Every structure is written in C-alpha cells, then in structure tokens.
Amino acid sequence: GGGGDGGDNQTEGSTGRLLTSTAELPEPGTVPLPVPPVLEPRSTDGGEDYYVITQRPGKMEILPGLTSDVWGYEGVFPGPTIVSRTGRRTVVEHRNELPVPVAVHLHGAKTAPQHDGYPTDLVLPAAGWDGGLPGGDVSEGSRVYEYPMDQPAATLWYHDHRMDFTGPQVYRGLAGFHIVHDDEEEALPLPRGERDVPLMICDRAFGENGELLYPALSSDLAGEPGVENRYMSGVLGDAILVNGAPWPYMEVAAVRYRLRLLNASNARRYDLALDPPPARGDAFTQVGSDGGLLGAPLGHEHIEIAPAERFDVVVDFSGYGAGDEVVLANRFGEGGTAEVMRFRVTGPAEDDSEIPPTLSDFRPLTRGEAGRTQRVRFAREARNPHGAGPNMWTINGEVFDPESDGIEVPEGSTEIWRVTTNVHHPVHLHLVRFQVLSRNGGDPGPYDAGWKDTVDLGSEEEAEIIATFSGEPGKYVYHCHNLEHEDMMMMANFRVV
Ligand code: C2O
Ligand code: CU
Image (tube, rainbow, N blue to C red; front, side, top):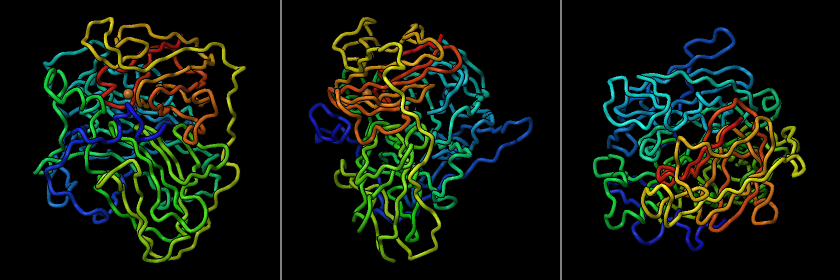
C-alpha cells in the first residue's frame, strides 16, 4: 500500500487530524538516543528466568527542560528490555501501581491464552478499583505471565492491551522491547553488542508544560465536531520519538549496525529512508521480520512500516565519511514528521561483521498444506448488529464481543486467511506467525517477507496469509493494530480447539 492514496487517513492530512504540540519542541538531532536498559531477572532458578515489573506513574524529561507524566513499566518509557533465550521459560510478574486496570500482551509471542493479555483479563490497581469491569479473568494488584519461549530468535515487544483503552494507555508509555535469541542467530556474524540497537519509533504531541496530549475518549466526546475525523485516522502526534527521545541523534562508527526497527505508534505509518542514501549498496539490508530471521537477506531503498511491525535491518555506514550526518527520514511525513532521527558518523573502526547469504532455515508454507480458507474483512460499517452506534470499525460486520466464539481453528491445522480492508489497517493475529502468500492476487509486497504477525493492508487491499495454529487451546484475538481502531472495537476472537 502507498501512503497518500484516497481513503487513507493514517498519514497526516490537512484537516486537523494531527495533534499539534503547544510545548516548544527541540531541534532534530540535539538529544542523544537513549537505549532502554536490559532488565535483570529476580531469579534464574529451576530452568526459568523470573522478572518483576512494577507499572507505575513516572516523570520523564522527554522534551528538554520539561517534565512529562508517563505511565511506565518500572515507571519509564520505553519500558526496560527483556532478553530471553529460545526454549528457556521467561516468567514476568506484573504489579499494577497505576490508577487504572491493565493487561499485558507480549506481541509476537506464542503464549497460552491465560498469559496472553486477553483484553478483559485485567490486572486491577493494587490500590483498588471501583470502576466498571468488562468481565474476564481479573487479578487484583498483580499477575504472573508465563512465556515458554517456544519460538526462534525475534524482536518482540510488550504493551498494554486493556479493552477499549489500549490507545491511551500505550500512548502514556506502556510499551517495551522483549528480544529473543537462539543458537542459529548467535552463530551468524551479524553486528552485535553496542552495534545491535533496538529503535522504538512513535509519535506523540505535548502540551505547554510537557504533558502528553491525547484526545479524551470518544464516548465523552460523542457528537462533538471533529471527533469522528480524529478517530478515523487514529491519534497522530507532531513529535517523533525514538526510544522515548524526540528526533534523537546516535553516534556511529563507519561500520555495520543492526537496527531493530519497531513502529510502536498508535496510528502512524512511516516510509523510512536514509538521507543522503549510502554511496553504494542498499540503504537497508533486512535480516528479520516480525517473527524472526529471514531465510536470506533482502535489500531495501526504503521501508514502509505500519504500527506493530518490526524490521530487523543492517545499515552499513562505511560508505559515509567522518563527520557526515545521516537522517533517518520519513517520506510519509511533512515538516517535523518528515524526520525520525540522525546518525552522526564518527570515523572508521574495525568491523568483523558480515551479512551472510543464508540467515536461517526458513521454510515457506505452501497452499497445498492449508486445510481451509477463511474470509476476514476489516471495514467500517454504517450499521452494526449490536447497535453500538453507527460507523463502527468492524471485522466481518461485527464489533468486538469478548463472549463471542469467533473463528474455530483445530489445533495444529494450517489455514489461509483471505483478509480484505476498506482503508489502511495493520492486521495482527495473536499466537501465530504467518507468511503472506499473495497481495491483491499477485506476489507478496516488498515488506511482506518472512514470518509476520502483522500485515499492513491499504485501501481496498487483499492479502492471503497462511499460518499453522499450534498452541494451547483457548481464546485469542486478532485485530487492527491502529490502536484507536482497536479501541473502537475492530477486534475479534479466534478459538484454538
Ligand atoms: Cu500488539 Cu493484540 O497486539
Ligand atoms: Cu484499522
């Protein structure tokens, strides 16, 4: 899909869809890039790593000289990075010291249903909660999430998933990286250590005193002018943050770096490019996608990335000279949003990294393996059967109902889902990794390679995705990862039986 076609509301337009900061924003390239700290386990006994994360309010200096109130994992945004190993159980106890219920989803993980952060399986505030509850398996104050890590090396992320409130809660800071390593990946000569850097890209808007601006919830605003447009697009901000810092800079030597790009924005899509482009070679060599390593490296001049997608890329700065400044640009943006961050090239250094021609033992799934094809349509319907109001975001004509059975999938079966959309929707399935078999009846697009858990579909597009549904029986969700669409109920169940 492209960025500016008709009906596409996820790139900024001219009609007030963009939230504009009233705070003074810094010049691009003046704030150093932070890298989220790696969380230490509380214990490593019994073949598992046990972590404790307290979700609490925090104060951060995001804009120079101003203080922003955030809701963070450990009080910080982004949250601390968890590093796991394939086959070794990771257990995370989440304590909720926020004033609202939360649910934690490890995005991209193969997780049993009770540990998947189902949107009504809420962890209530430790201080108590007398607000409403949508049903579900509720815990008070804390909840222990278990992750078997029965999956290969990949860049995962964890974020809030509370029903109807995921957009505002992630916007206030509830997102962090969870990186999985395995032997296959570690044997590769890719850049590592300080040259393997996770980059969480998201947009925000700030009030005068540095406070995060997010529109009040739609239910409070129903009928007010402009609200509909705002929610058509999802929430867009005018400041671009990387790892929580506005338009930061990173010093790099003139060598290869592995950059794990994550679009953690609520609604914004980016078209990332290097400016100037390198004198030789591709700007980005993709080595991995959402769900792990590609079979072989794939070159890109630019990368379109939708909310929740990850592109694991190598950038070779050896074509630049000492003192060069390289902008990571966003070709979908305008003005401030046309830039993401800067790399400042310090000078030559030793580099024993390489991009090998084979990265992993990647096996394409074939049509012949699939037992059944499901049709799934993501669209805005003028009316919906539950009477929840006109113009709801629906899947197959229905808004989210946690009690519905949804699509039943036999455990271990392989299915093709033919997904269609009306406007841009990044479509995400929990539990599984899938491959894109076709796009609009032709070959998959340049950003569809490898194991995906989110596929970005444009206006009136169609993709066939194929997945093997192996995992614990139970109820999981699939949904639009434009978080405002998700909160406007563009979510549905599937049930592994
Ligand atoms: Cu990243 Cu169901 O979400
Ligand atoms: Cu959507």
